[in-house]
Length: 160
Image (cartoon, rainbow, N blue to C red; front, top):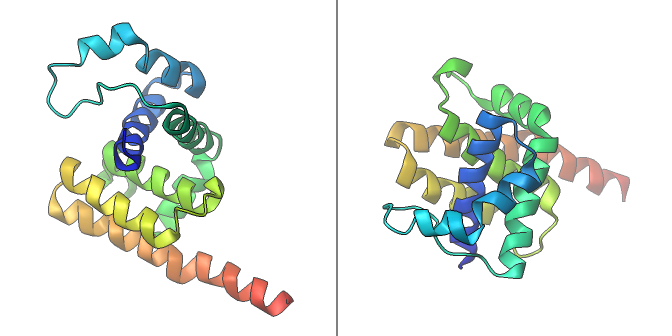
């Protein structure tokens, strides 16, 4: 499984977790049970392959961290959702945003820079959302990087 497919699985599971409020680890375990994956073989676009150990740990971390920090992540989206009422943001768009912000803020993976996380979020959103929503996702993440993430970097540089 590629990193992109692992990220897509994480977005799907972040969406499912928010809808079901199920324990994130249990949700990930259930999704990747061989019996469940077998039911997805004929579904177009479904993640029907089992991830390797590294990808599973990555997916599990994204789902768990996005669940643990949901309120903070949603507040960040709200602050940077200029011109969009909260009820206008689809659940899928929120899952993509939560995933990208989780990667940027909490994952600590040197291979996933903020620009990679944003690019991947935009590319994933293209397969789920309308162009207007894809632009919105890009705008929220870009606004976050210019605003709050930029302030964190300036504060860190000032402290040195």
